[in-house]
Image (tube, rainbow, N blue to C red; front, top):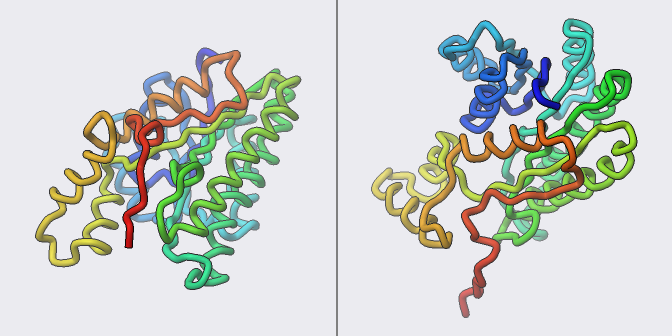
Length: 261
């Protein structure tokens, strides 16, 4: 697929979502964006240099009815979807003893049920068009989990299983399904989370960045456009499917030992 015409991106209000949108906008595609954070998404679209190619929608991905309505509307307006990027995510803290059922259910809804429903909706049109691409955004925690990430890690790992299964089932229809596995990425959302969770008095966020950078062999964390670059590649490279590619600066290649209590 050299030039996708219609691209859907979920979780688009954040830096990674907008970086992905920008990549495809540069290819003159029509980008359909959604997020639960309507004001943030509206503002980012309004200030985007290619805003005429972007349309945005407020969608609560934990609500199956909203998910189905959103994707049905996109298909009705544009005739088909060439590329679906399941980018939405929410990180829940907690281990098996402290994680709540509500958190686990929300994580499942966002990271697995919504991608399933969206993919189910776009596949018929992709088959009719002779192909398409689905890119799922997972996380390094799906492969090497940190403490207190039960719901997030489990459901993002489930998304990898879904990726492989769909790639096998849909390959004969020239529909490719791949996954991107990012590490910590320098975004406003990460900065906010680190400030609130680890540095509420805002005394040392740069120190947190430095500490995270030192965990990576490349001695830095990633940038949003580096994730978007891989998404663009996977959406357009015609003989790659069923892959799970890390954008992690080598962190999962390095041996990390747990601290001794």
